[in-house]
Length: 370
Image (tube, rainbow, N blue to C red; front, side, top):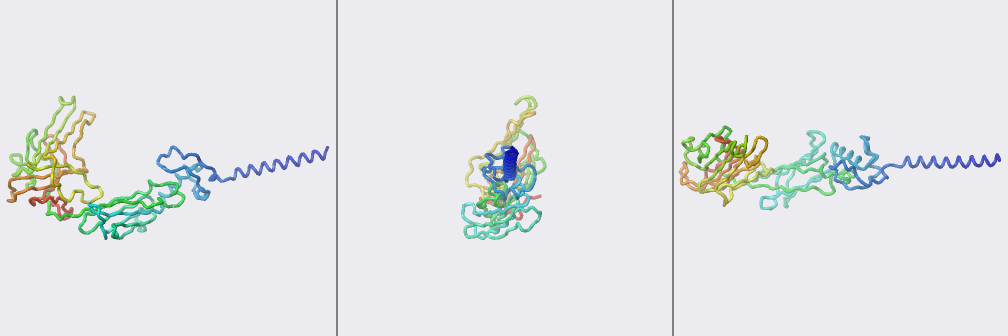
């Protein structure tokens, strides 16, 4: 009986030892071996595919909150890459406005660095025969570029790497598997004659519901409302108050036209230091433009004002210029703002007859007459 009891105790001890070993093994299994069926759904900024992360990656993840899921680990790795940097490759394709490659353009790239004013992210060089320039550097989120060449307007922009973060980025230390590419357009300078221009910051006062001419050479309204002599362009402003659209409502309307000429609205090129087109169009579809701004006390009903990123190109035809020159003349109006009886804008005017070039150099080609 005693022998049987001792045997039973030995078997029980062996069984308990095995169970303890199995429990220890399960507890020590790395969590990186556990496949996640889905990522953290609350982090919509991580556009990555579900996958198994290596145990090496889990070991390298620094303790920062809960790292028990694939999503939380990737959030941590994204934080580390944007703080300490990852390898990014950028390729620029530099073309002119006709799509032809621009060779030997000067390229200045700056791969943003975690440490401010760190020169290691700066790359300079020239485009090849195909207008291509490529570079690779460590960066924490972006590559800023500036491209220039003699005879062209400079251009600048930015390539963002951080939005492309993925599991590939986390495991390789590279932002993307393939380089990110950007097309850069350089506009030729037209070497136009100095453009006559002025910024009218103070209100230009003239009566409403009346056509009022404006002289670009004299920079003033035409008499009897100013000292101008030639109506290169004409304005009509009117305002309707309370009874038009209800209590506390107002509608402001501005019409501008050119005598026997043309007007058109264009949008600035944000990637070019010279935002205007090199030459005015040869044909205009309209001789007038109408802008309307309407609102109630609490709601804007209509807003057709000229946006800050837009400008007007105009053509004006007069019998005789004060300078004694006949023909068509071209120019630009921007920063247009109006109220009843008040008008503000900035203009550039080419006084050379029949010269459609309107991209005067910002340093040498704009006479603002300040």
